[in-house]
Image 1 (tube, rainbow, N blue to C red):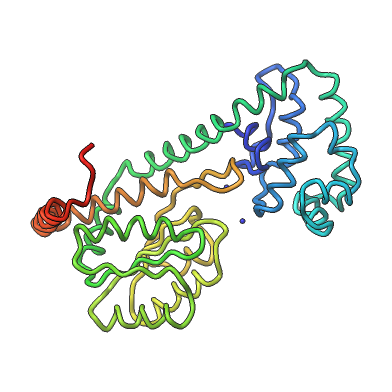
Image 2 (cartoon, rainbow, N blue to C red; image 1 turned 90 degrees about the horizontal axis):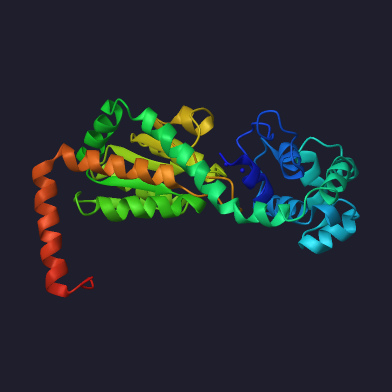
Length: 310
């Protein structure tokens, strides 16, 4: 339900919670004032569409009725109301009342501001990811925890990797790479009883660890699977964006990496780098096995002509 805060507020209304303002000694621009209204709130994709429309069409949207806004965005009227209340307003009329003076100031502002704003949205999203990577870099100043979990995951045969909903792509990336250096990697990308069966089978086959990915919005079924893994005797290493909360409380080891939340859908530069770091630690934990498996894979790739000659 995730450094250029001005642009993210303009694009999809998710910021890190810091109030937007102009440069030192400067008055806040209309875009920055809108960003301040939306700042610090994690919104659903539908709510992000509303936020983006309000920002992109501020001078018009601030004077639309709830019915007109819902029709223009393509959402229901209750969705607009929930959006307003999620920002702390009593309802849409109160939000509109807050937007109208900002819209009027935008009309009186310098021409071309909107074009400049849109030109920098993607750059600001990248700035946010650079901040996430910088934070991760600081966290990895002492690599001992990464080395330790890499050793544990390398020893777990089989190794189960869990990622549901939006986290599926991270889980599949990790599993795809891990299979090059690990003899038995199993992926769980759906919840329910079949997933529980997979966890039980992994434990009975000698597995000791599960690596789980949990990116926002955090799914209840991920929490259920983490608990199920612990219930059958598996330990859980969790890669997520939050160090606190129900998921972190259930895991044995928690590794955090911020997600990019300045665009309509989150991006995962830092979780991806963190995953690669853990893969490196797994490879280093058993260098002979790693070398043998990589050589066999390269032989198979050459024999079957897997790849283009770039």
